[in-house]
Length: 212
Image (cartoon, rainbow, N blue to C red; front, side, top):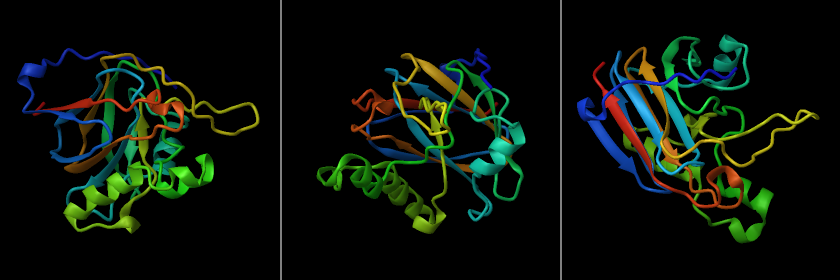
């Protein structure tokens, strides 16, 4: 499923506008009906993203329920972002890129070691970013689940394996998500430099929120 849909929202009217530095985490409460835009400022930058119900953090994003609800392998315009309670947390309402991964998960120090060698063991990773950010809300590593990788290109190969290849997002590509309940959004602006998900060069992303 790939559905490119553009948005006419004016950044000057956003209630919130922030640039997430390369490799850094971020989080924000998004109220029901508000719209979050994530902008890949320089292109080919994976943005690992989690959603939690603001009322009860034990209700959180479910990749399995999301894929089953869409009967599709990727996230794009029209995707209902589902919770582990099988409720709609949010909906993707615009997407200038076309498709986003939710199967490959977040990089971690342990995964880096297995995939790329022991010399990568202490490199910064998304799971560590998530740990730092969710701790602000009383959560820990048990609360980190499979995530959405916005702008990450993960094709399914002929033998069924997932491949991580060069991203297809161009500078300025974006995705917009409407909150269907009050949600906490947690982002790791991916620091990975050992595979091409960030073009081997992590770059900043921009996040905006409208009271739409």
